[in-house]
Image (cartoon, rainbow, N blue to C red; front, side, top):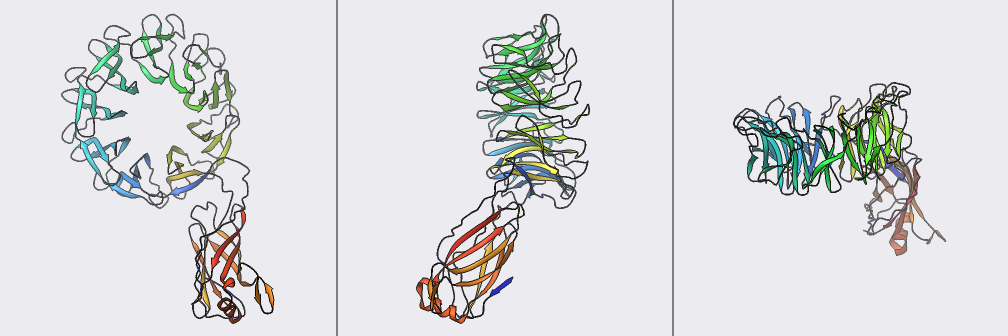
Length: 568
């Protein structure tokens, strides 16, 4: 507590009545890039909680986290503190909650318990319960591939009687859709993808082998038997683009190439490597009006390709000739662009962008043939945030607008790197997980650059009969680079007659300092002359607080707050 006084004393109690008025002076940041800030320490200390699977429901963010109880289900409702939702596996053993999916008013996930094994659970954000013990008892059903289509949650599960098959639930009733491969044999459903209000997937039966199937929730039906016989075409990489679903599949003749289906007609879309050669398309990603994928045409190695649904062509020969550029980690970049990890003869694995006209190296983050191995690409406000290793800072947070890339922050100084990953939206911000070496692996967030500073004060100020008042100046909780500090003056709002002159009367001056979300309380004492002034002149009770505030980012502001004085 600080004291600011002048030469006189007063018995008057000053109370304010008006709302706060703040005049802000902003300082523009040199860069528009988001700034990382530590967000939430689930398990205080350097070990970290390793949060994973973040999914929001009913105002609570659910996630798995490590603690003295093992890996269990935690949640936060305010982004400032976390609580245990459910200790699935009591004691120090892990319940290992994972594969979180929002469906209706619940988050469904997989979890382990001593009585049910690894089965399907759900939570409303307040508690969690075992939802379905598909393989009764402690044995597991290997639930996987949770996928929402309309009012149905599809997933795959295995039982001794039916093998690995497609299952569904509406949140009340849980059943196997169909034993496509009758008996204990597995239909091995995978690549579950919503399309045209139904579920498309790869599955196999004794007659067809692995082929493209679909389900309306009642049955599982063959879309097309691309490669007749038990060997099947093994569709993979199912990706919706426009009015079709695209995928790679094998067919005698063209071999493994790019196919598509609208649900009625399924056909070879592009024989990238004509004849019996394998085009081997993979990493299919839709962005804007284009579908990107990697493939080889027999003249070039595996390189980026794209199509608008009519015209299909190689985007660029990044590694000339039959060498492969090793395209991977492909992510949409908006406006018909993608960003990905690739390498050429001169550079190691580095970030590249591509559109219909070609591909460009974003930056050789780790110069020379060494790899920066960029991944975890996340699009935010037109920029891509990702992690990469420049050989100096370890795997750290980088960003790019498409041309050039910048280290956003060396969160863990030195060569180890904080390894940021798992970006996700939460409370109007983007959160992620990183290790700064102090808190361990915990939650961080990306926020706009701190370009302004302000302070608040109550509109009512009360003086005790002794002439003392407690002026409270608060630094807002949203101040990213606090503390707020500076000087203030408390004065009459207008000129009044005082000691034979008409003037603005300053009642107190002093300094203040408060951390973000905290309040500095300053003792104000009035002189006897000032007490008489406030008592006799009503206009003198209209005060103003002028604060010259600053923060650690160098932002400065002159803030004026109106205060109304009320006598005892």
